[in-house]
Length: 128
Image (cartoon, rainbow, N blue to C red; front, side, top):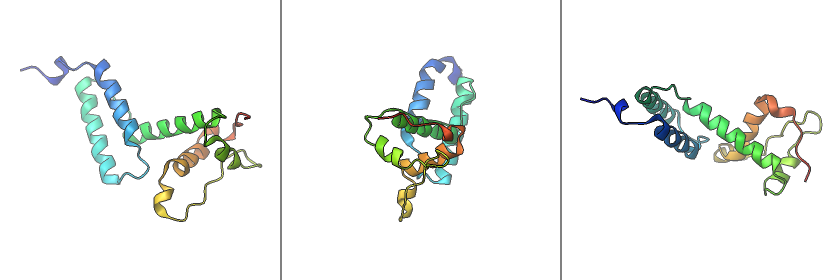
């Protein structure tokens, strides 16, 4: 009996893993769902023989990369909005005003929080 490692190639499973996690988002996912996804990631990692990043790490990295690409692209529709959110004192991004809970779990508030926690928070926006 052949184990799953015999026929599954890590070069095939890695892009599937990363694309599934990137498409999952993560802003409004429940804790129970996150733990189930992490359990599947650990099982997939043991099948292919590679330690894979947990769900939260992939989602945070992807969200931060998306925000940075928006900030670096002056033609992006959200670039001006992010430019207005820049603090004049610290170059951090000011949080958007959200009056309803579901809006707090959307992309921009989540990405701004991650950005402000990262060491990149003091960098300048590119000029339009």
